[in-house]
Length: 143
Image (cartoon, rainbow, N blue to C red; front, side):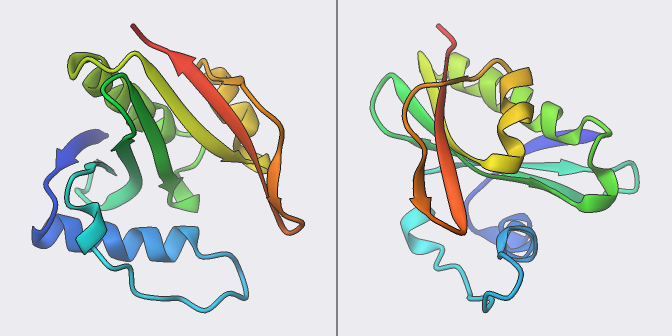
């Protein structure tokens, strides 16, 4: 298992776009191509299995000098429960702390709330979203 920060653009980034589309498009929704242009200033992380295949993704989006938003965390179904998600979160947290961020925030899908709680996040607001996609705001202070 390996987690790497990957640069915007390039071959690894293109693989990440494909993986995000595959893992994060809800069933029955049309798949659409992600426009990479607005993502130029974000931080990207990918998890790789022992064979070198990309199996997980995470994005950090700075919102201020002290706060970063965790987005699009996902792993391949075949590796869930094997620590890849936790490894992605740990790498992102270490990176955010190194960059001087003090707070990490995210909007959790209902099925992932326990995972983020185990990672040290707490609920910090009321659920929101559409009836078919409810999100819970969560945060973690890291510095």
